[in-house]
Image (tube, rainbow, N blue to C red):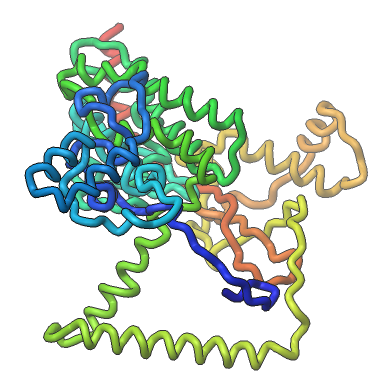
Length: 446
């Protein structure tokens, strides 16, 4: 095998990790459904946070697999005693230094986002009511890097891992003060949701230490200590879910194989589109395998030829010298060419936009810009601002402003939005409702 320095070395690759979702893990390990593919914990103890989770005995499994020539009955009984299905010569049986039960790795995409988060959304919809959850999603204020689901989240079907990740950004915020049926305290519900979300984000750290792994265990314990709220609400009878039990193995797997970004199936999910779906769409849907293979081969040749041309064109340029990132916070402002509202009067800014002290704040800003070298006291600044006359009665208003990161080092890095400001005028319908509620309250207490 050729290494990065060009030297060729004799290598002996070892089967160390198996990356796949839960059905693929069961198929590789030869374990029955609703069981843990790594340990021998009973199915009725999957919900326990204190159950002993020992890795399955590989030697006992190999001894059972070796009895295949002793007869079908003896082979099936031996496999049942070892805790696996009667699999004939699995691919890992003769691989050296391989323990398939140890090699099965955590899967953030299918176990957490498509598993526990999906369950959690269903539980919250039953606990709080689908209409209430959707209404709170509708009234979320806009913000950068947060997707708004204006029609709610309970009616969505076939959600992807990306969409579950976007929902997790605001999930805790929409239930922070929610009321539960039967006047049950919502503190346990909030702690359970927070524990699961903390675990979700901690487990995706790109670098771990003993402290972060301790926080990971504490977040898992926080969920388990408060999960009975879903039983009290009549939503669950038990929590014997294999994907919930799988989070017990995350800490030990991070110790063994490193951070979870080394074996996350999210990186390979895209290949389903590139290597299968797009290739199938390029065929006439008859005898598709030969056409798909030919299409993929031609696509790879085109990519290699494009890379060769780019290399020939760029070889005379100065080589790219990566440098460590600096701490400068250079930002560039991005606004639309035309304002969202061309002429908004100052009283409208105060009443509809909530800019109560717009005149005063603008006067202070002008005073500071006119005297950039002077150090103002608060009273001095107020006195100068009071004498500034604003020769206009309306201003243009931009409803969205973005700040983008700048390519300070000249490496051609793409601009990334790092911050933004959103503003909207008060809705007329909402103002009518608020005025009506105020009128009702005034007449009630007169």
